[in-house]
Length: 75
Image (cartoon, rainbow, N blue to C red; front, side, top):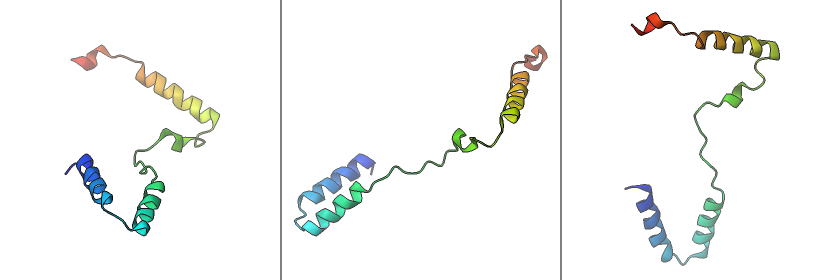
């Protein structure tokens, strides 16, 4: 069952709930929803890891390594 179908089933069930405690509990759960944490690494995790000189040296290494084309590599 996909997520939309699950949501619709929950809404259908909620229509028949008359217990205010249950509705308040559901409301509090929904109000406390937070985005799921991302497991993807972020470049911001590296912020402050390198000082200015190290960052400049790394940038030069990247530029020198990435901006060279060797025509023989394509053969």
